[in-house]
Amino acid sequence: MTMAPPGDEGTTTAPERKLSNRHIQFIALGGAIGAGLFLGSGKSIALAGPGAIVAYAVCGVFIFLMARALGELTLREPTRDAFIAYATRNIGPVAGFVTGWSYWANWVLVGAAEITATSVFMRYWYPAIPQWIPAAVTLAAVYAANMKAVRLFGEVEFWLAIVKVLTIVLLIMGGLLALFTPFLPVAGANVHNLVDHGGLFPRGWGGIVEILPIALFAFGGVEVIALTAHEAQDPHHSIPRAINAVVARILIFYVGSMLVAMSVAPWTSYSADQSPFVAIMTRIGIPAAAGIVNFVVLTAVVSSCNTGLFSTGRMLAGLARNEFAPAALGRTDADGLPRRSISVSAACLALAVLLNWLIPDRALGVLMAAVAYLLLWVWIVVLLSHRGMRRRAGSGAAGTFAMPFYPLSSWATIAFIAGAVLLLVVEGADTVATLAAGMWFVGLTLFALLRRFVPHPKLAGQQSIE
Image (cartoon, rainbow, N blue to C red; front, side, top):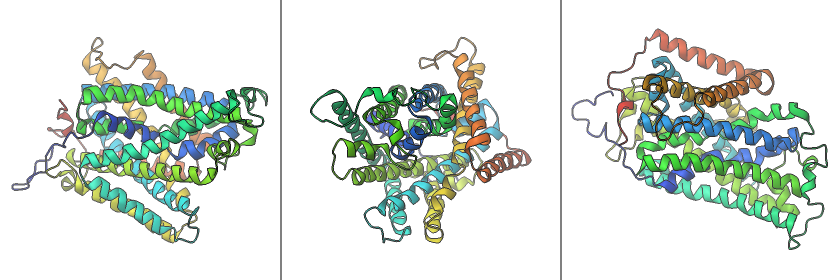
């Protein structure tokens, strides 16, 4: 750790442990259930039909395995610097440098895109409002929440996630009532819709393969659990519970909502530019369905932006503590909050407000293009770091929260995520985004090698969460 200058109190203050089990579970749950479910699932259904259920279920299994590897790392090698320290310690300092900056950039881009999305959704009620105004208000609100005590951040995330979860539960319950009871009759609603329009795989295996990157990316945000461990009241209890429960709930919500959607109405009735949630609510007679879903999606993107600022602030501070960024950014206050790194990250997010002013029609697409590559990189590094940790610990040193079916599960998950990257390169991604991502990784690697980064003798990652 970079030592504080004389008289610079509070620079190494440990964060207060104010995140309870419910906070951590809903932070992870809220981060992984967002606009990708409420809006993006329509595209998945249109491309793969009922096969989308299989794609999301398979991706959920592999994300669970990645999360278990991350959970084992978090409990066996406790650190406030998460991915930076894991990669540096188990792969090398270059990997730590590239991964830390990539995860920071991932959440800056996601946060900026979500800020932009709030402006898009506000048009539903206020079509004449300038797009930059909702973006600026959203940034100011999440900045204020993150600059206060961490418990306030946890409470905000908890209630924003509750809105999303309740909406999904009510939709699934409404669909089940329409399917199996006479109390909510919907014309044409029948579970046979799953097979009566081309079978379970109307687009063949090609349709499933095509949406795998979309389905995999929908689970992004689960890894935030690692950043909450150092501020959790009881990490050895809450982290395993959060990982085991969150992934299962995400699978239920994604797979359950899709099963209901394609039973209430044939998959052929959905389109890539329509939310299945709006269609289902309209069919079961809920008034103002579009307005309700618009509000829920608005809370979802605000939640994601809030989590993004939390993540970027901690990651930038971790980079500084490991001498991969200016030392001043690693300083924390008396409450253990990295206020400087939060402020710098917020300033980067403010560029999204500028984009919404300069190019309002293209801002969202510009920001989201390369995010998938950054996130998939971090997941692969987590798995490689976990393998390195296991090698160093010895063959018989599996912990109490060990990754199941290791090492076969580890190699299978790495191969699956690497395959998704290949699909993005070959089919799914914008050429400019692919080139930009390639230049990003190559540039960071060369920069790290030229600077001859080495592990700092007092890595922040060596601090215990005991």
